[in-house]
Structures are given as structure tokens and as C-alpha cells.
Image 1 (cartoon, rainbow, N blue to C red):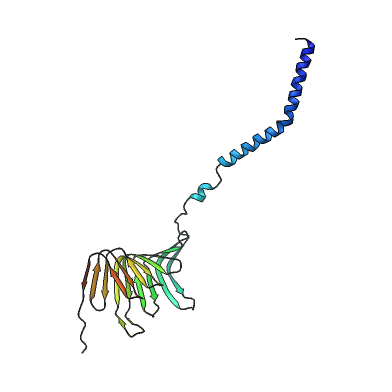
Image 2 (tube, one colour):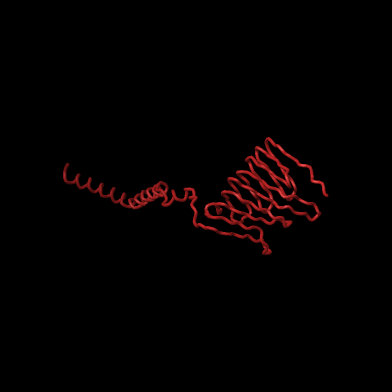
Amino acid sequence: MNAAAVVSWWTRVRRLWDRLAVYLPLLLMGLMAMTTYWLVHNTPVAGEAELEAAPRHVPDYFMRDFSVRVFDADGHLKSEIVGTEGRHFPDTDTLEIDQPRLRLLGSEGRVTSATAARGLINADGSEAQLFDRAVVVREASTSAKGIVVPRSELHSDFLHVFANTEQVRSHLPVVLVRGTGDRFTAQDGMFYDNLNRVMQLHGRVRGTLLPPKEKK
């Protein structure tokens, strides 16, 4: 190859390079944009595992030999809860209590008390789940229509008390003692609605009714 041919070839190469150099920044920017897009969609977000993890069921404070009172909007006492030890769980906003003792005041002024080995109370005290040797006692009262309601006791290893609606539920065997000796048992739980005067006993039910005592 003679000198003229070399010069001509080199001149063509420089012209081609000059043309490519005009588009090279655009090509590099496009490559960088594609790389950035890929990194954004494939890089794990910091803290993602923590956000997806379920909150831990760990108490944030404890109470010992305590008493909690709940009042209505008019300042009247609705309920009082006493326990030997209490643990508050922020994830469910509930209070777990050892040896709970509850005192509830119904709409007609009837007093209901409850005890158990362990209890779980919601934030506003409207629901109480009582576990192990649970007992709910409703004292005798007279309604506005003059109807006498005898004293009653509910015994079970689980009783769910609803203070606002004056209801009690259970899915475990229960024993109901009413008045001076009436006794009922149910193997599959019960539902009691004090406001509507309804008692539902489930499963095998047995009952003993004593005749009323004659007035002397």
C-alpha cells in the first residue's frame, strides 16, 4: 500500500470516528439510564423485611396489685377491674391480668361481678375474656316493671363477658346456678343476653328446678 492510499484510509477512519463521536454521549447516557432502571427494580429496599414482619406480641408495661376504673360520658362508673399483675400488649391494645376481679354496673343498676385465674381485657374495658375457673355472678334485682330477677352464677373454664350489651358467651361446658337451687349444665357452651332475658344452652343440657318456697 503506497503512502497516498494510507493517507486516504486514515482520513476515512477519522471521518467515521468523528461521526460516531457525535452520537457517543447519547449512547452512553442511554446505557446509564438502562443500568439505573435495572438497579432500582432489583435492589432490595432497606428495612423491607422489618416492614413485612408481624409486630411482636411483647408487653410494653406491667402493673402489680392495681385497680382500673372505666366511666361513661356522664362520669358514672361503668366497671372496675382489679388484678394481682397486669401486662399491656401494644400490638392488640389488650391487658392480660392474673387473678382478675371485675365489677360491672348494668343499665338497670344490676351489679355483675366476675373472677378467674386469668383474664384478657380490651382497651375500653367493654370486653373481658376469662380463663380457668371463671365465675360470673349477677346479683338479684327488680326491673323497672317490678319483675324480680333472682341471683345467678355462671361457672366455666372460659367466659366472654360483653359489658356494654350485657351478654356472656362460652364454647366450653358451663354450669348455671339460679336463685336458691335451680341448676343447669350444658356441654357445648351457652349464650346469655341479659337485656333481652334470653339464655341459650348448647349441646347436652341437664337441669334441676326446685319448687318455689311457700311463704309463711
